[in-house]
Length: 427
Image (cartoon, rainbow, N blue to C red; front, side, top):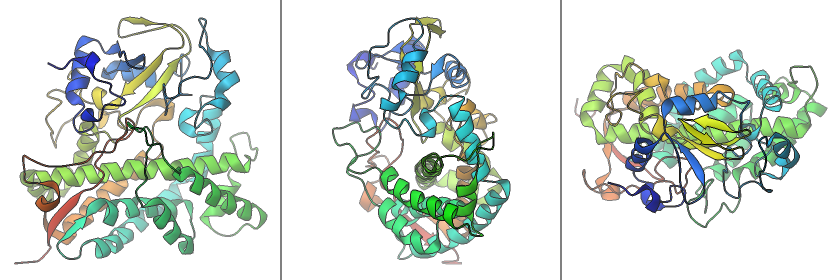
């Protein structure tokens, strides 16, 4: 039996490969249990997580990405810390990003995103995905082996969002070069190696130039639509506001999709029977994607800050409490998902997962990620007769060697080496 208090969920790399026993033990004691290392209340129950996601009156998202690292800049005292949040919000990391904003500011910026990305643009983008998937697989599937993340998942996810936001074709190689390379640290790092340069710095620079240019000289292109989008009241956002929304979609959407794609392909490579069934019954792919999201959530969780005294899971929590909504635990709550540690391709309620959050902060790129996964798997099946995990790189079945991202925010492997038989070989 795991000793919960002996393990630091946020910094202990021993939990990167398999955090589920720890989270189940935590939930078994209480769905709202305080961990002792950083004084964070871990929300591991599905109902409790859902209630908090949907409650913006009593819970702030100001610390959603960083939580207790470094924490709030001043002591959070009193029975209502709303005024302190408002006063010191700008001192918090990533305070200009959508995930950390609260209504009504968040509502206005989220609406700005919906005006940038219209239904017509999404439809055009999905048509582009099919062509792009073929193009990327042409490059990735050579020689019988590939490292799937670098060869396909990362450039594919990046170029889909580049197309969605209208990044000029001539600039896209620079985006690939800058964003499709390993970082020395990562967001939510479990170690002492913070990112040497956030991708947001590069994205801010590029999109600031794009938006300023399109406002001076509008063109018949997508970036002009991004630059001319207005808030719901008709006012024009500052350049930085528009840049933040576009850059956030670019960075967050790419990471989530890469983790989803790599996890899905790893599952197929590990389970030949599952792969054969999915190849033979393509109509099961959408629910397979939902079950993959439930089973291995790309985002491990989000933080919230209690603005007032609250009761969660029968536990009284004072104002100023930092909570971690553990998606990975909520998505394996047996009260919501029977036999939660078994992957079931036809699970009836798989889509009820909270892998993309819920409420006002539900991931705006969720439909995009689902479409990218569907297109990628369809095309991968079209182009191969079989795929498997490369034993030379990851070891034999039962003794796999996978390296997981050293972060408490994202869930996924850093590399995925696969082998494959091209479609038609031996036919």
